[in-house]
Length: 353
Image (cartoon, rainbow, N blue to C red; front, side, top):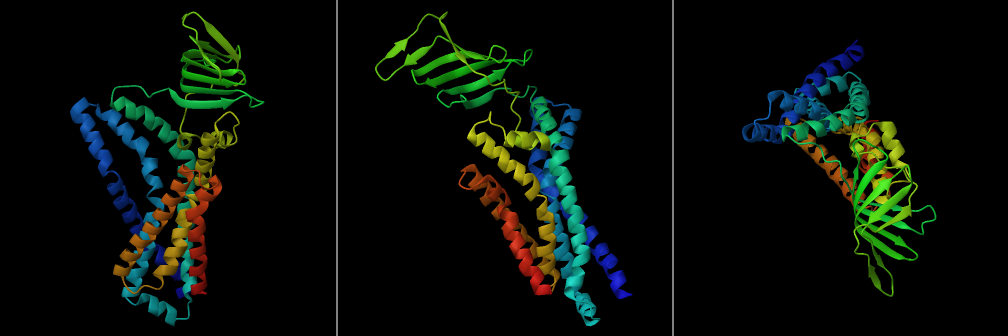
């Protein structure tokens, strides 16, 4: 009878604490955002409906940082309370093994992982894209459409194309204005302050071109002088950050040959994080459960929560820094915190067997 009722009893202990953890962490995360909204209301008289829309659009972003830490809090504090009141001793004395108590914890962890995956891959990309519009609406402006510092190579890699910025045409998606252009060819380097990308004609057209060779520099001062270079790639749409892309689009960007190596690496890193980050909830449940079943009171539960979150956040930040420097392959950098926590989870499970 006890074995059948125990999972429901533990869930009744964990679920309210999980909700408390979610609300508490949400309030902490929203302090700066509320200050930002208050400043915009005072200084720019931003309408309430725009601020409310921005708040709703930001919620999936906050949820990304709430799900796993709140689970660690619920598991460790809940088990700490049971240990303090000697309820765990009573359970163990009845012949129930500690590993059995992990079943309801893993159930909550699986549900939290599923919720996190849906948030990261369905809710947040759409909300982040909407928030970009809401954010600039607060300042009574439009989101920037300029793409900065883009580089491309010809198919034979003998010609390199560089643009300091690219502004896609609003009305014709096959056209874009270029600025700060440099094209490197076997015949020398061509530079221009302005140019035009025409995907229909498959060209980059440079205005007022300077040609630099190893021997001399030639200046073409006539503003009507133009030089056309073959360029077969299509005009890219307005640049959307990887975190705001739907999963299929992010997968396409991660394998795109149009992007530069650094942009492709960033897309690959963000793609793998779409799968590794949700797993943090399950790992928090396993590691937190294994740790919680060995603590003696609620105070140790609070301390364990802080330690567990700090270690995971540190590993998460290390993976991010390694990816920023491209010092590690994108999949390895993305899966680093989950892999290390996974090893810890295996050791924790071994202790309970």
